[in-house]
Image (cartoon, rainbow, N blue to C red; front, side, top):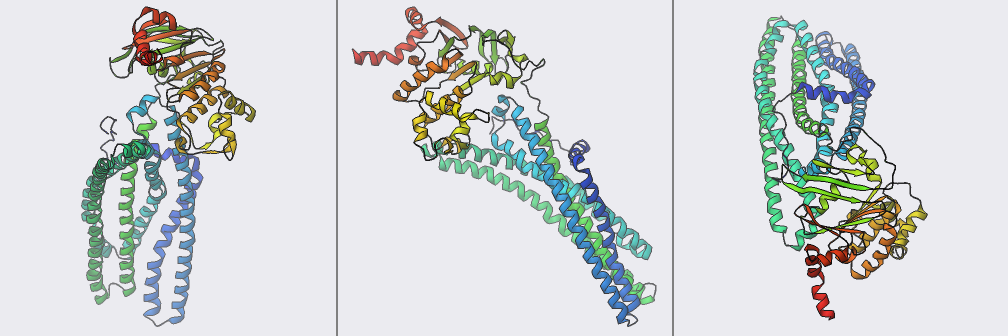
Length: 592
């Protein structure tokens, strides 16, 4: 994982800017939040009633032997409990519903930003980590909204209400109860400092586990082929252990904090019994008031404990929001300052003195210039690392050039809307990506292409007989990553996809390298139809597939070393001639 960028969250336990930014997600649901807030205040008020009714029951009825009056107080107590149940149910339901809608909005926003980012961002950030942003981190923020940011006011109102009632009943005994509060703040401050770092560590290792799992599950065939199971298990165990260690660190703070809170609550109760009991004995305090004080003391520490839990929730939400907003604040590098949605023309491509480097000045392309006239085809050949695929990436605006420019019908592609540019280009790769769905949906890719056009494209690339042989034909399911199809079938499907979308420009990147000889003969016929009237750029190691293109560009170390037709380049006896010899020398000898 060392090749990827690390997250760089802030060291603050509370960041007002982050919290204010999170609160903006509540705006569309302010009516639900307001209703929940009112219910929380009502709930806080109901919590104050029970102990006071206990005081009345003891002092006015039990002490006087008034059983009839006691039944009345008990009935009122029951009504208070029923009202508290209804209020709490409504409050939880409304707030949880709003929280789910906020999660929906936030995940939609994150996924939308991920689709806007250029390909280079995903080279530096593993998929598993990005999945953590959309799943685990959003869940942590949802918990802040549903259990923290609004309900904390209920705890505060309950605290203030209890303090007010206790002070009104007996201010001296109330002050004795509050004497332990300074110790509580000391314990909370210690917990606050330690918990923040542990939450950050837990989130970091969760992201690394997800990234490791995604990488290894996607490449399980390679793992098993090369016997990497034990090695990968060791690597996973190390990451998993560090995740467990981070959780143990957080558990330590929990294990110390909550028992200390319970101890302080017990001390407060003991002080009430000692000081209040003395008051009862001398007649300055009623027995009902003493019992009510004990009950209020228990309820006093409950919201304090809840506030501590809310603080933990805020800790996790701050750590998660740092990462989410770091992603959302990442600006798309592929932009169009003066957006031109489309360019009228036939598809003339031109690379004009293009130089490009993925990092620093480690140039992959150096002063590359060539032109592809409308309806003509150009092939790029050369050794691995010569820069052929980089040219395709620049043409598709997966990256932007650092020097020079690329034009489509005379317009710099950096001035084009990337979506409009890519809609005019069909890219067929060696590694075909298929989505879960049907054969037809993988050809359409979400467009409005009708069934007749889908079938026509499949017939043209000789894929129709295979599809017709499937139980459900074009409605047959394609498993994840096209696991049920052969490599050749997936590439034929990608050709059908390109043809069905009828692009002005066709780009083939090693598109026939994994196809057997028989299938290649079928697809050569399809290619003649596919290339007819279209501007084409072809990358191929099989020189037999590019002999009929209009021009061949031979690349070496990021530069165009030779250019010309197949026969002309053979006559030069240069780099292309050497490549040709490497592929066909043995075959020619066997034929001779």
